[in-house]
Image: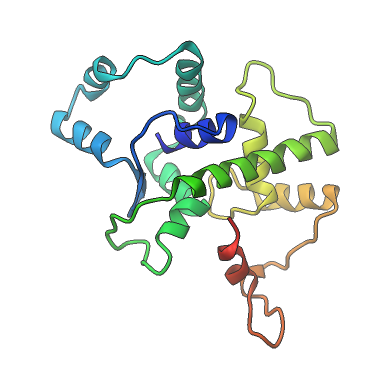
Length: 199
């Protein structure tokens, strides 16, 4: 659900639904949806489908597109993806990843993250003359490229070799192998500490 919300926010500037996400241990969770599924147990997809609000054709298409793209990820890969992404990490700042948390994920943070990732990917496609994928959602390729350009190293769509090649072709600076602890001067800043400050 967090991907549907993020893509919708980036595309339209408006949320698809009103529920808010919390930064739980394994990723973003919308508590009322989790509670609904937990109370039903087996057979929840069919029961959930009967409780869905009326969505227009474009919203239903977006829901299906997101499912077809990220629905292939395992539960572990989905958790790794959200852990590598800024909204979850920012909400949990200072909380160890394996500790429980009910802290809210800011909707602006979700919008900004997806918008920035998609913009970086779209710019790369234009710069490198990469064609859109036929029969794929418009955002799939830009999202994949954005993950690699912004070096979300824990993300299942990240590939170090591809990331370095993309950044080099676009003329972005290269990072050393262990760039997160690179000392940037007498003030003691590291690349990782600066990255945490970015939206």
